Image 1 (spheres, rainbow, N blue to C red):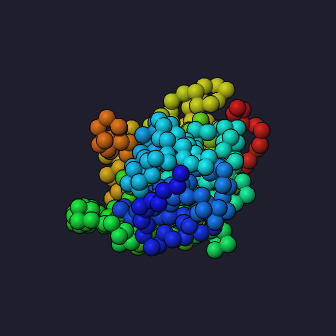
Image 2: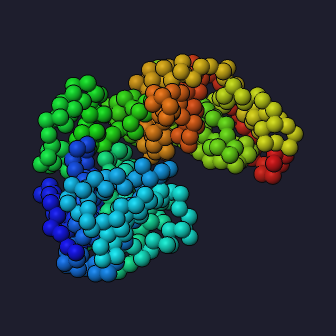
Image 3: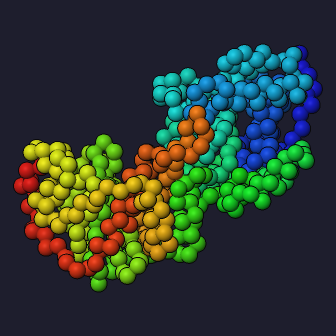
Length: 435
């Protein structure tokens, strides 16, 4: 049985009915990205002549509908496809089940959370014809590294839809790297949606009046953000870039360098290399690693061509048993390695965030050595509990260690006075007694 569907598409989406290995749709809200992809895939599944013209098999058409995380089918595009099947008049052709959708001529749509799939599980999808990745802005590089070679059938395609977030997101780097021979990238927004109605226009206009400019331009115009949505230091990082305080700011030999630590073992250990000139702070270097002992970090610091002042540790720096064979604190270990160490008193995180916001207006960051700092700070955000949907305390994740170190640097800044340098003893490898 073959029906003529009532599918309509924005003119920009015509390339969805051409042969391309990669098809990337990106843009803001109400641009018909997901609608367009859903309708195109349903058309191909339902129309045998179209399927064969595009080089797909006449007797099978497997579509893997994936996103980075999917805790339930409700988080997938299952409902969207079901709605489009009805609106296109294709109900007689499709069997919509709870966890899959079956169509004519061997068509099947399945729904998975990609990050939850092992490499072995992903192999079961290697015979699929199309993978559609929704919410592509949150896809991680490891997921891409597994997915792309998995969809390997001759003539198979990978489609992405997303609202751009940061320029360094894996999907953004991937899309920007595509050549015409690889595939297509379509940028579209609400202006390209022929069904953009008065209700949506009222929402858009309200957002333009009430939202911060960066939020509005990202949500509705599909422009990249200077920092992730809800980032704690979003405005400060945007200003850092706009006023060219993120650039070439190398070591100044006329000022001491102050190492500031955020201690970690299983989590990251982060060390910022700071210099102060009157009210200005400069971050000239950055070190991050994990499962390393303090003698290793000490050697790394001493291998750099800097003249050092005090090393600053957070309030728990004088607690015992810091991964040593003698139960010594981080302060004791570093002092035993020749460093002058100051343990900062414990302070409220929120007070520290407010002070850091003010200090970032007079902070300069070296782009060459501190790119990791920049990435962490633009992604540092608050947790949003599902129960309240209201921003809570800062989220403890891989970005928070860098942000904590920066707060400690702001707290320590008054003591960065270039007064007394540290005379470190010669390096003696293997004689520290540290595990």
